[in-house]
Image 1 (cartoon, rainbow, N blue to C red):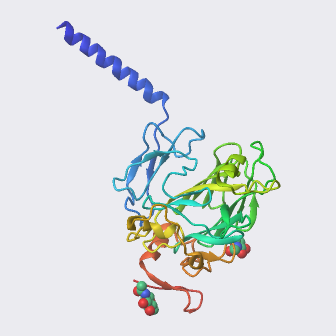
Image 2: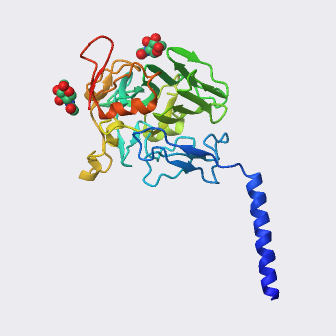
Length: 338
Ligand SMILES: *[C@@H]1O[C@H](CO)[C@@H](O)[C@H](O)[C@H]1NC(C)=O
Ligand SMILES: *[C@@H]1O[C@H](CO)[C@@H](O)[C@H](O)[C@H]1NC(C)=O
């Protein structure tokens, strides 16, 4: 009998404690995937308690991450700063991790541009900077800038050149539709297509391009330590400030191209599976573009939907399943066939 009362008391205590916990903890956000192309279309997910919000302001606190292609359609916790060992990352002298988790290198060439992702609704190019010490057969390269095109809009993020590195100086530079953005804490484009949010006061930002991609970006220098280990021989007047990035894509098509993008194709055959330990991916000629915001690479397949602003995502998403051609210029329209 006594035992029963104790048990009841204990249960009441526990209920009270958890009630208080619920009151003080932030209510987990509810999120829905709105892109028809995703597996979890219209599924409502609740953020885990450990990361109740999608917009955690504290760099060390994880944010709620909604993977709309997750097999189980559940929200997860993810760090908002780029994880250079995570899927979709591009860091160092570009070392990339593909959609299949395989690590590979793409050297490119300094002062040139290559398409990292080219899909019908999204194009992401990278500008490579670097140097070639005497006697080397190729350039050492890093990603200095990203240029993004989606719908009829364009966006870029760059690392500003610096002689020497100072942590107290911000090296990020942005532009949207050709105009520079001055980023205080956060910024939204007029129609909310692009959202920027500083993750720390300097050199770290979370970029969100609605229904297309989330990009975590840091600016980092080549340190004297990196230089010593890798024998880059960087000059004293340039620390090669560059980007570390990690992409989380929403609704890529199965035909997605680009240095990183093609590894997200469902039938992508990884060179690592063929027994290559640290594969270097070539394809410079397939993916080279003439500038940061051009879509003229051989394998580029970006197809800007002119009426992006009117056609809402649900319709725009359907373009992936249609056979569209802009080359047939019957008036302003585009021609699509199922
Ligand atoms: C970027 O957008 C602006 C505004 O629409 C446009 O004037 C500019 O030509 C675009 N740049 C590229 C390279 O598409
Ligand atoms: C798309 O349409 C064009 C012209 O009608 C045709 O030649 C091409 O084979 C089609 N492509 C696909 C993938 O259906």
